[in-house]
Image 1 (spheres, helix red, strand yellow):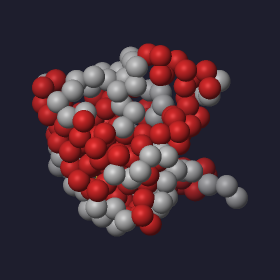
Image 2 (cartoon, helix red, strand yellow):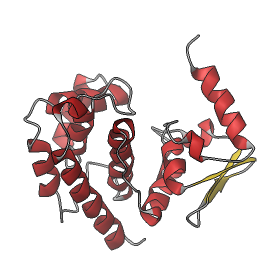
Image 3 (cartoon, one colour):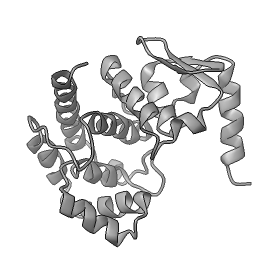
Image 4 (spheres, one colour):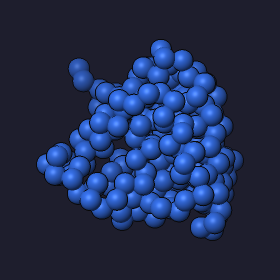
Amino acid sequence: MDVDQIWAAIDAERSSLADLLEDLSPSEWRTPPLCDAWRVGDVAAHLTLAHAGYRDVFTAALRARGNFDRMIRDEALRAASLPQEEYPRRLRAMLGSRRTAPFLTPKQPLLDVLVHGQDITVPLGRSRPMPAAAAAVAAQAAWDVGFPFRARRRLAGLRLTATDADWTVGSGAQVEGPIAALLLLLTGRQAALDQLTGDGVRTLRRREEMRRPS
């Protein structure tokens, strides 16, 4: 995908996600998403912060004392106090804009809206198909970026291969499946593990069990 295609995919995802948010009940809005210690409404609020400027990011980093995860969560919680109908409106206001938060390329907001769309819909039992070409671009970005996903280190010794896109990374035991499921895996989500096959899946399950508190 070229840059124009990436931005078109971002616009399409933001628009359809705005439609989805309008359809959520208050109880769904309060449902825990795939992200720990968040609510669906917090994820929606986070997505509306994609146009944050340098001053916003610097101030947020100071508040969080340089802790990236705390900064992201705290800013989402700060933004999550508005009426529910405000978040679809803000997402739609972004359509057509090519603005990104500081230091990011268009691949990061693409990754963000794709993955967070699943964070919202999977726990709600709602279907949200992920475009394979866009997911492949986001998956490569997650693999290449290092921080915050650390995918290369977490998934060392595994070869990931998409069954619905021309995409593969890594080396070692095979893990195959839809690119959408691989993207969730790359970003630290285990929700789509049942969609993956290959010898490497056993390794993934063992690693997941080791991370769980006893």
